[in-house]
Image (cartoon, rainbow, N blue to C red):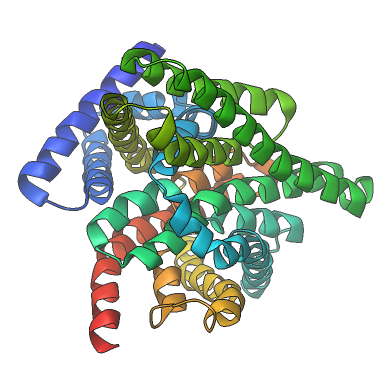
Length: 413
């Protein structure tokens, strides 16, 4: 099946599922689409028992979609920029301390906690897995997915200061999480003895600092171009070129593309409306990126649902996935506890912030994409199944209940 036909099928399915959700289910957009996609996938699997052609063609289509490349190299930059463009710097500045710790130390600590707990879980079931591979799983499942979080928080009516913490953390811990994964992946490939602490530190700093510098520089350059013109068509094209250019350049320079796009989006979204954009341009830029956000979100969550066709449904793998759900939540709760305790007295935290942020930390497509990038000898099928179980639980169960949890906490406070 050609790339055009695959995209056509995905867009048609997204449109049909979005209509069903909007007309009948009325669930939060991303959750509704993924639930319908999973039901559709189960239906195809059942139909496949009577007609193998249907199931084989569906599997062939999903296997021909390079989910890792599609999300990490193409969709992610657009989705992150769309989210960052509407993130207010003033709110981020007030919460910069906890957000910085959540997105850095929190991700690293969570990686090691989950990796260690999974290692001993496998040992308890006489299913030994190399510790470095368990850490790789910890790295890919630790970051909360800004794509999922942004969509769900819009419907949760969370207080603005809490939303800023969760969204701010998600925008940045995604980039940091990918960097931690890359570092561990290289160690797993080359061996710990082949990489010194200095090598690991340099790689980490280069990816993170380089990505932020690239994003700030590119954002400033785009801002200067838009400042000297007043033509909304051209300025919309400049924002599009900015995102695509940053992604390509980050890949070439070996720096973090996600962090670069987030920094550029925040810079442009806070600076340009006041100085470079007319009211007309601001409206068109907002509407354009809102549409991009909705469209790509629809395709992404339909893809996540359809990935069920290629996930190994092994009983033991599924059991590990179910046990991993509370372990991942526990690790996140512990990782957030330090920053929350440090800043609780300095900043006005709402009651049970740690609990809400733990439950509101939705895992999504990024975790699946990273799991798909694992090599077969790294336990790819095992960790892909576990990741899929956690992601589905996270988006459906946590996503549908985070709003009621927030309301209950605020009501009892």
